[in-house]
Amino acid sequence: MKEFRILDNADAVVLELASSMKSLSEQGRPVHISLSGGSTPKLLFKLLAQPEWATSIQWQNLHFWWGDERCVAPDDAESNYGEANTLLFSHIEIPAENIHRIRGEDDAEQEAKRLADEIKTEVPEKNGLPAFDWILLGMGDDGHTASLFPGQTDYDEPALTVVAAHPQSGQLRVSKSACLLNNADRISYLVLGAGKAEMIEAIHGENADANLPYPAAHIQSTHGTTEWYLDAAAAKALA
Ligand SMILES: O=C1O[C@H](COP(=O)(O)O)[C@@H](O)[C@H](O)[C@H]1O
Image (cartoon, rainbow, N blue to C red; front, side):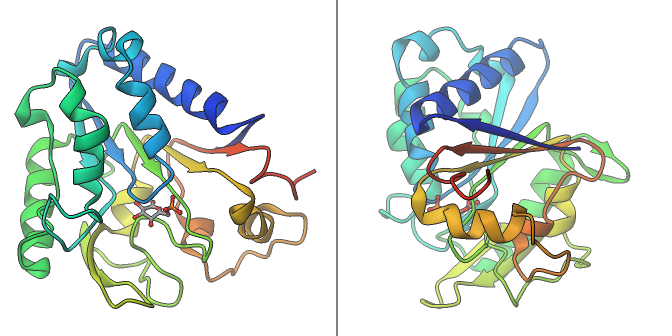
């Protein structure tokens, strides 16, 4: 099932996501959430660090993972974990064992295998694969999501994790694979700003074709819900 949530502005979008996170935390069980990297989730992290959310969310029930990580040290400005730690985790009370970061400082191939093993051990299965409760994803203006890039993504890759190289910089990344992302109960894309409007139109506009080369056009939950949270600027071409 695919759904669109188009809201006036970025603040309204992240407010809905924060509210969703609070509800999930109140289910009285471990909930596995995969965060996106890049620039878009920063606003969500800042909101969640505000006292209203920081003190009311049952953080001990939430386990945080990442869709992808850049192969850099955790204190590097490009680290997805580092950004979440600075903006969110350093402001809340959450058990250290609930943070399942990708070790960007380690050898990429070995880390991809270690991460896959950790996911298999910790995340309950559905359809024979670990099923995350909620995967938050971004979308690059080139149509990439997590670190699955156009022209280099194998949608049939059976491994849970893959190593990818950023097409321009060559920077190595460790990423969840397409099959693992697609097996989530719920996937929410968070896409903000006019810079993403053209790609949103290409993927979701009236003339979108089924064989687009963009991973964000193909990563969707096989058995659950896929939501597109957009602000008005990103959604401007979808009338
Ligand atoms: O899912 C993801 O998407 C982004 C695109 O990010 P943004 O910086 O345009 O918000 C990607 O680069 C990121 O690493 C990933 O987790």
